[in-house]
Image (cartoon, rainbow, N blue to C red; front, side):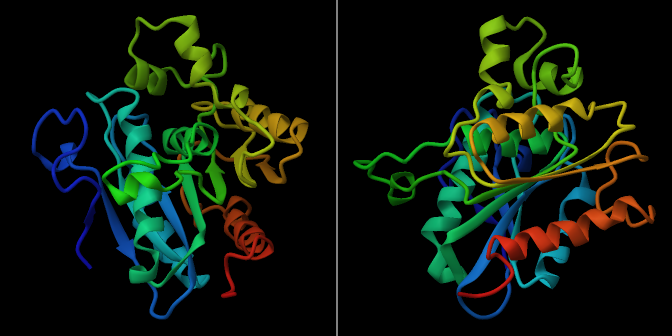
Length: 267
């Protein structure tokens, strides 16, 4: 299936007309109807999108009976709010076209790695209900995902635990304390934040495990259900972690959690 261009007439604040200026969804759809769907956001420090955190994850989700999409969201030189606009538009688009794609519009999740995890955490905390009187029917729909999966995510923009490269690419080096706080996702959790699955390694030197711990703690304080898995060994950017006998178990834990939340079986 061809990529789904999120704004066929051109994305807001587009800087040009190359592929990098055109946010899109790359579908991995299953046959049949009423499938759950997960939108995958690869990491890359808001500077690129890592291939090993895209298609392999979509194919794994397919093995669980879940349709998937890999999101080409905008990265540097684009800054906030371009990537957030892209993921919100992606969620609305999948919801709007759910019947066409054989999906359940009430089972749309988002999964992200590293900086893509930050993007997913903002999608789950800075969503909106849509614009009821918009001329564009897609924009009338809610951008709230039904669940989140965060894999060694960047969560906070605050020192000392932020990933400086991601913060610089997203916000620039000359950034105010207010901007830093507004995009530190642990500060934006509410009781309506979607159920969340998190995994990290305690040895991660690029994105400290405190990012996941802070988000999980905020979820707990607000009564939001979550799974948190911290692996003793292993670095950053592991993706499926197929080469690590211990960490690769995250996919089994993730599959179990998706089943718990009704995503791996049709209603």
